[in-house]
Length: 460
Image (cartoon, rainbow, N blue to C red; front, side, top):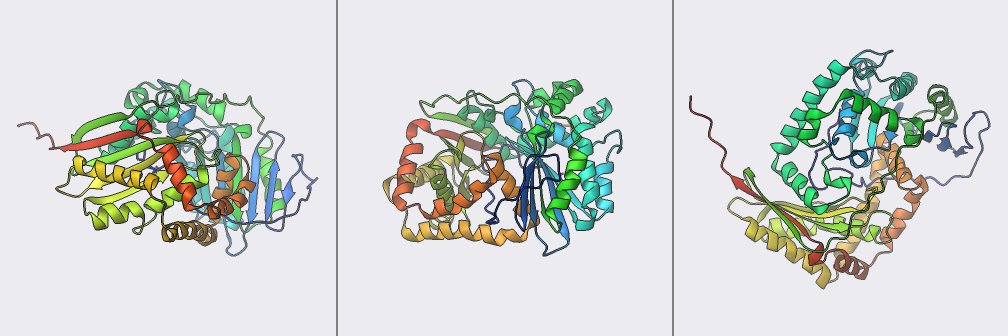
């Protein structure tokens, strides 16, 4: 199972810059007891009677299929005192049903030559299998089975909870970047559940019960809160019929409760300084910014590319190459975030450098964005990087399906066709205006990690 780094800036919910293009007429498929489906020679969408959304993309270049099930649930759907449920449930989804015993899911996929994986983010949980096209039928059966028949055995739960607690220790508590990112998120959000780590707080993990997890599963792992996507070597109408046969019998449930929390406006700089065993100082800076729903989202995405995409990016070039004060530096923006999130700036100091050197250098680049229009060369290079990635990544059937899902989750897969044109239409003046709007001093959140020597082992 894939475990995305937890707590680090820009390490989850990132916008993967890939997107297939389809221009298709509309066609109704009356053979299924589902809502009308829209189809083309290589694409089909449908909504089953139980609310399950289906997106299918034919790609006959190789005899493989990427089959994916996405649930609209992540750490933002958790309550205080019960953080980590979504991620722990992702682990438990591989622990068996009444039909397939513990650990049989991964074994069956492997025996049939496939690769399975999963991840949990702030906003959703995704499960996917890449497998030979003639083996996809049994994958559909497996996924439909665990959508409704997960065992959630108390002994398995107790064992897997320890695994997650250890994961938290190694990926957050013992990882300087993860630790500082978690601390900064906790001060940047006062009310919104984005303040909590995806992996959960250790105190919550210790007290979570299997009954809480079972209630969470029954609330969110329902067809009307899920989306199935597939890309690869199949006939879309035939595959839709198989999905209908297995998933269509799962009853629709009550719609999960919506997340209504709106983060209050930040009215002053917030700062956290942590001292921790580490090799080098770290500085993270985060500003509250809007998500995809804002007309400024494309400009924020383009700024993120200019700042951090590759070694020719502005922050890497300035702090690593020219000033030689950082080992790495960058920025990140979560375009697909369900709710407004943070725009991150971050840097790791070179040996011998201090946070007192690194923080002003990062802030100087923030002020430079507000003071000077980005050069035409930088703007054009970033636009080309974004558009080229859309094209190059189409060779992956996984990416073709997953990007349609990401756009579907924020309002509809057709939004993909507006993204590159919106990026292409931006000017240097747009970027300067957005920087001035969203990076004021009063909205700044600063996290600094000061290394301390390791604690000596106790004397024998």
